Every structure is written in structure tokens, then in C-alpha cells.
Image 1 (tube, rainbow, N blue to C red):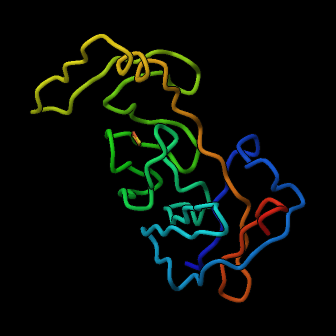
Image 2 (tube, rainbow, N blue to C red; image 1 turned 60 degrees about the vertical axis):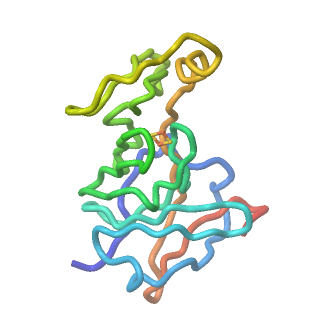
Length: 162
Ligand code: FES
């Protein structure tokens, strides 16, 4: 199947990208199905992911604590962060598994710390670090519009970066 842009929720379009110029960032050949790449432009680190629904561009920053998702794992449309076991749906922008640290989900609902099966439960002694984890809100992903032109993935970048 020809590589194509994946649909994404219009409400999650990255700010500054409406009417923004497109920049050619990567050849589609360099992003086979099931792979992810970080592409940096200025100080913006983008994640290009070839998901089961097509190619998406989002920030290469975990919506939890900003780890690079590009070195995580992609399964269908779900990206697993290399830190804290968080999992995020690149099709919807939603969190599908909260990080082990717990904290607030995108709707502001608190989730406790947890441990993967077979690992000892995390002890979270009271204090400022625990408070910081409790108050850290996992955001929804933000998407950069993209198109494929002459075999290149072009991404709409905020005007001051284009
Ligand atoms: S930084 Fe990604 S789950 Fe915590």
C-alpha cells in the first residue's frame, strides 16, 4: 500500500500550524511501516511514525515527562515510551496506559503509581517528589499536518520555524 498521511483529531493540531509552510523533512523510503524517526528542525524535535493507519508527525516528547518517543516501541498505532511504561495512541492522541509514576491523566483524573506484573510495587515515600509525580498531568499528543510530495514527507511547521 502507498504510504499516506494518517488521520488525526482536528482539535489536536499543533498551535501555529494553521496556514503554516510545509518543509520536506524525510524521504518516505526512510520510514518503512512500523518504524519511527526523530527529525529535528531548529529546536523542534518531531516524531515521524509510520503507523498502521499511515504516517503521523507529533512532538518527539512523551506527553508525560518529555522522553523521546522515537526510541520507544511502535505497535500498530500505539507507541510505548522508553520511560515509565506509558503508552499512547498515535491515532487518537490518548493515553492508553498511564505511566508507572501515576499522576493526572489528560482529563485531570488522578491515577496511583503501579508496577508491571512480576515487579515489586514501587514505594512512593511522601515528599515533594511524590507530590510532583501526583500533580504531573499527561497531555494529549499534538499533531503537525503532513503531506507526501515526490516521495518526501513534508510537515507544516509553525511559521517561525518553517
Ligand atoms: S516520560 Fe514517558 S511515560 Fe514517563
